[in-house]
Length: 499
Image 1 (cartoon, rainbow, N blue to C red):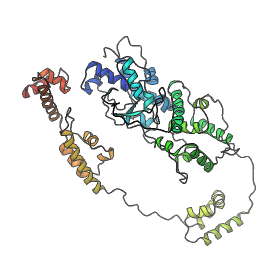
Image 2 (tube, one colour):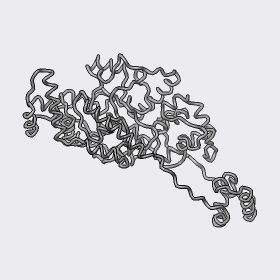
Image 3 (cartoon, rainbow, N blue to C red):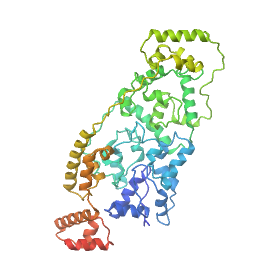
Image 4 (tube, helix red, strand yellow):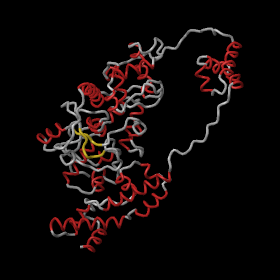
């Protein structure tokens, strides 16, 4: 059980609280820290979306009054990422954070498959960092600064800067927000235009509402209907609710500077019929990034509160007219046959474009005849493999060997040589561990370090470090410095062999 818990600062992410606890306790071993915080071996796999919080709450000091939902609501960004999900889906996400689902919360909220990616590094406001150290004696990681699309600090209206602490990997280390990871003297502050600043501060005010005020949830169908109603008011949809997609895309792109859309991971190619805005306003069940919801609402001249305070929508209005066909069936068949004859060799897709309207009617009312007379779909040729696995294998093998050298020559605390650490040292994504990379895997398995060899390497490192710093080393000092804790008898015997 934890003997104390650091003061929870306003807008502080839970990761930051654990990092400050680690520093206050003087802990070196991450394994010991997790055991101390969670009361067992529970992996803290996500910087922003932790799981198994029920275990953390149970392990808090007896006089603690912190409740798990309060912790999630005030010290994780989950309110932002579930704002546009249904009540049921949001509850599933929160339950996953409390009990642990095995599946990453990023997958449950749709981040894992989204084109809008999380930040690579934790961000900090230079002014906040200075003020915190003056008034609190330390600083901390704010959740509002880590929200995707946040370019400024809403409080000080200055650009945020990247720290040296990564936040996207699944092996989390706990590092405090201080000058060691935020070099204020040498940072490069991006100079954004006044227009980008204005747009982003408005975006951040909506983010603040979702994080701190909003408790409402709307079904996706309600949200889609709400957008149709507002687009109808702007003459970007017909009275029946059919969207004027080309006009919408054109006006949207003219509203936002290209640079801003690039910064918000939402650039649009108006000539691409599958650009994100076209797909976004379609009535489907796919999750959308909250960032893009806010971009659309801002374009419509609305606050996010307007959506959640709305109680009713109209959406699409089904047509009630029963129009009589202009042509008889025989006339339509004749036209379709002529179209095929006039376009010899055309595929079905090409005929559909040429005979737009006619094709739609025949498919709906005369499908059997259509299949008989229309050229069959051509079999697609087998696609050639896009990836040259042999070439990639050679390149990955080279990267793996260089990474192993880097790990072995690391000046700091030794890192165990395993496939995951080699991948991170190589600076590549998970494709590096693909099973088709046979030579690479053969090498990875050959150099993988067993736990005893790793312990010995850490012991030798700790002894060398202590001897250099203080000229002597005891068994107990080596245990703590290497991060083994003080109660492992087997480790003590091993250390004695090298002292």
